[in-house]
Length: 126
Image (cartoon, rainbow, N blue to C red; front, side, top):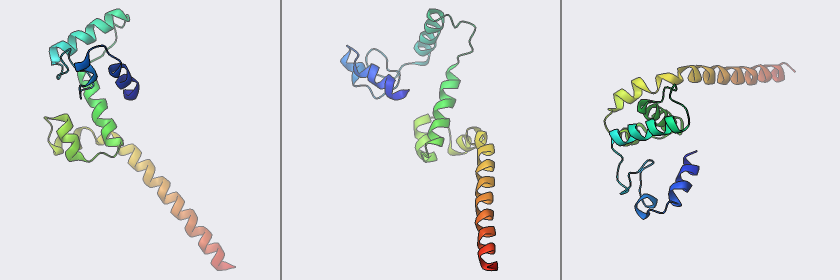
């Protein structure tokens, strides 16, 4: 999705937007202020008849941090991207979501290793 959005920005008539490093740049290519972003979200909600939808800036931030973690980005780099969070906060708030995934992965590994062990035992019995 971000790749598609980047293509849209790359085709924008405004050179400053095309050259901006930000996902949601302001018209001059700089970082879009929170008030401007909130206003943009409200306009888009009205335009697309999503007024009843709970779209909050925090959800974008949360999604971004979660995707960075899932992509295997190092926590110190995520901290710099997220700007105001400490590594401890990132670890407590964003990584706990995936405990179930870690448990499932551990169980999968255990089953796989247990299967290999049982196959080895059967070969040894022959």
